[in-house]
Image (cartoon, rainbow, N blue to C red; front, side):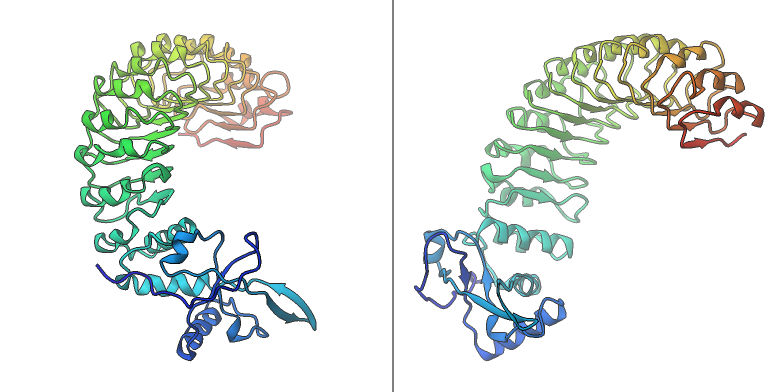
Length: 423
């Protein structure tokens, strides 16, 4: 472990506790030249700014942190701009961040820094791909709020101890594509205020890992895309996440029968079950109780017209994606009861000309995708913007049996986008 951050010059001169605070580094000639050069490179230095104006601005530095080497010093900065004297607060942060990024191995801990500065350093290291496991230790107990390591290389269980050391300060964590296992999630309960968790493509997390997050009642967003290990039984851990707003289980092939555990999630607004081929009509029945649901995606599932019937009571539903589902125009009987439906994707389903007159009941519809269905010009009569779907703005008829003569039926409507590509 390297040394901690170098101490700064101590000066007790302050105005009052509410004044802005500056941290004055030991401004040796070499440091001034270096920092000035960094500011010039970053285009942060005004031509009339003097080198001695380089200061670090930080807000509300606790007394405890000041004792560890950071001394608050109020400095009134003046800068001549167009011959007028104005109060300015030149920022040293850009030079400081750049210096830390390339000298990270010299710092043993950032825990004495204010949280926003530690967060900026962490984000910069991640963005520049310079954060490695050895350097991560410097962020232990830094009270970071956001850990975005989605698709970041070499993230595994050894990183989790430092990540979870943020405790109740941690609000979001994205560990998508990592090698995190169930064992590493055991202490996640210490992060009781966390609101968003993304474990997409984490194929070493199973039902045991789900059980570890079961007590995180403040969680509003949870994502486990493409996970082959989560089962219907393991989904029982989700029943306690009463504040959940968004749940993403796309490409989770083992969750058939597990949606019953979502019944009590009355605040749920968005549910993604795309490409879960295990989902059947029976799985739709528990969703009928999610009356706050606004977005539902069940593409490439086995849901039929019978399953759609369970959705007719979801009056807040605005988006429904059923691409590649074996539904016919008969499902429109149920969908017509959802008065606020705005976006409907029935691409690659089993629609024909029969029953397509029911589309005229979807009065609020703005976007409709009927691509790759066996529908012809006849269906366009029921989509006429002038008398039927008066709010329709986008219509996809890709690879349908549509001719030029049929498009005449769409004249006079509000359509802004029409996509037609005949086979």
